[in-house]
Amino acid sequence: MTSGLVAGVGAAAVPRRRRAPGRAVPVRVVVTVAAVLLVLLAVGAAMAAGVRTFDVRTPSMGRTAPVGSLVVTVPPGQHRLAVGDVVTFVPPVAAGGGTAARLPYTHRITAIADGAITTKGDANGAADAWTITRGDVVGRVVTVLPGAGWVLRMLPWVVGGTGVVWLLSGFLSGRATRTAARLVGVSAVLAVVVAVFRPFVALVVTGVEAGARPVAGVVSTGLLPIRAVGPAGASERLVSGAVGQVPLSPGSDGAVAIAARLDLTPTGWVVLVVLCAVPLVVGVLLARPRHRGGRRPGAGTADAEQVAAP
Image 1 (spheres, rainbow, N blue to C red):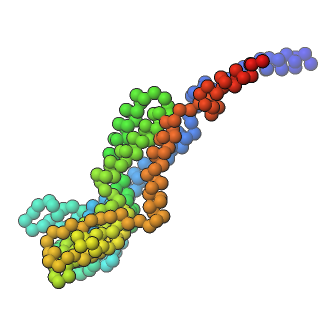
Image 2 (image 1 turned 45 degrees about the vertical axis):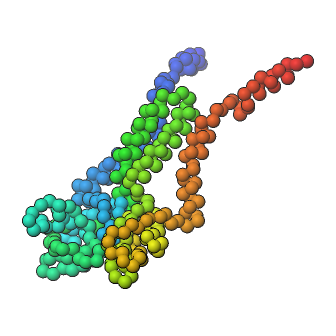
Image 3 (image 1 turned 90 degrees about the vertical axis):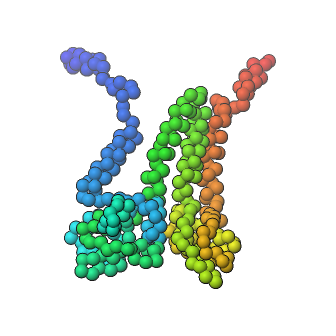
């Protein structure tokens, strides 16, 4: 019985080893690192399998692949190319040589005859001036990601601008002030990048048909709906990648100026205003001075004096 007491006391006296404070890795860090590794692994496996992505820079494919889209292709392999397939290819060298024509194109197959493949952009009026072979095909398009190309183009500038904002705001005193300055600064960086790249509102004039009633062919190259307005005030509403015609004044057979104006529904305008106002409102709220307990400066002292008074 005595030995049992001694053993119990001895066991209780042994201190437990505890983890040193501050060494535990936060769960969110582990989850973030794991997610990044999984994404990199998936991208690496896809590239090894021949999957490629291409940023659409011209409006030739219309609404099928608007400007700023990212097309995902897979090698044709044993797949039999057919009329109607959208493929990415490198056209043959143009007569006289040169490298300008060796850029990748993404167009639709419109005809196949004796191994010669004819392609055409959905928004183009005529077929391409060349024919290609299966060996010229880089891949068959399996997915189109609208807007992803814009994101890839703007991302380096946004990251660089955000880094500058973070560095400069580090000299400010007060955590709330730094957070507010960073929020407003990053919003300003986004605004400048968007103004330069114009991913939301833009159009391209594809040509002018002269005659008694001339019209200008236009294609929307932005992500949001627009209204293409001609010099005479005539207009047409276009969504991303849509092709349209804007009536012109008689005698307009040369260069014309077509304006692109944002054309949202009332709900769309409300959403846009809210998205633009949120960073500013949150920044102002974070920059406001805070007091403990939510009291006004001096309120706690006044209350103490009243209690102490006889």
